[in-house]
Image (cartoon, rainbow, N blue to C red; front, side, top):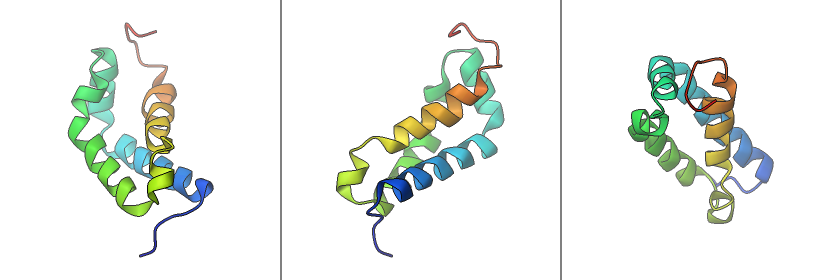
Length: 87
């Protein structure tokens, strides 16, 4: 499979991976936000997603940080309704 070479496609892939993490790990996400340990709770899943993302996009796009931005947008910002010391 050819590597993704466009920013738009790289962003879509990053958001799709982050969305899957959100969908399949809701309890861990809630617990992680409530206890301020989100990235510890999901460390294994996040790194698995990162490896998938890295294997699918060109090195230039990988270093543009789209995956980490998608994690923040989907795993953190969208969960602002959960009680947390963070906000």
